[in-house]
Each structure stands twice: as C-alpha cells, then as structure tokens.
Length: 95
Ligand SMILES: [Zn+2]
Picture 1: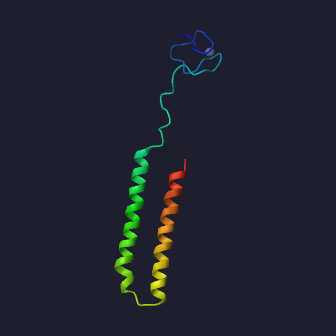
Picture 2 (picture 1 turned 30 degrees about the horizontal axis):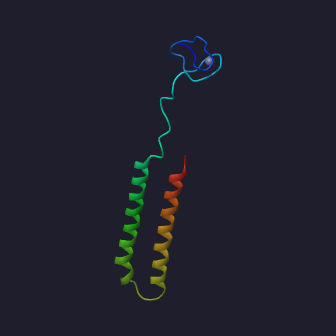
Picture 3 (picture 1 turned 90 degrees about the vertical axis):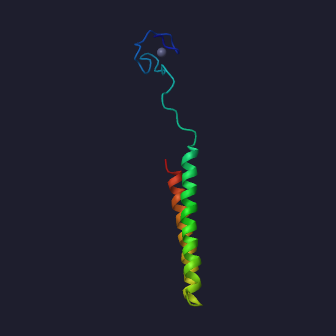
C-alpha cells in the first residue's frame, strides 16, 4: 500500500510507515467516550451503599441512649458516608 502521509510504498501489513512514521490506518481501539455505563453503575453502587448506611442509622440510632452515644453514632454515619464518597471518587478519577 501507499503511505497516506508521504506516498512511500510500504508493506500491506505495516502499522506505521517505515519512512515517516505515520499510522497506516485508523487506530483499531479508540478511547471509549467516558464510559457512561460505568458511571451509571458507580452511581448505583454509591446510592446503594449510602442507602444501606442510612438504613442502619435509621434503625440503630433511635435505640441508642440519649447523649454522647447518639452523637457518636451520627458522627460515624457522616464519616462513613464521606469515606465512601471519597473512595468512589478516587476510583472514578484513577486512570
Ligand atoms: Zn510515510
């Protein structure tokens, strides 16, 4: 085949032109446009975890005695929720 860039005759199976280095064909694997399916799943996982935390909090917190144990319980819920969000955000922005 003929190189599109410089017109040199190159092997049909060549991936790049040996002379100018131009790619002979479109890249077979283009970067996926921001995998919307993955984001969907991540959002669902995040929602499920937060719902689970809130569910546990709704069930457990009213049974705690008034005062510090209950405050500690709310603080733990907030911290765990924050931790889940931060962790998922890190997973999302890796790569
Ligand atoms: Zn070339």
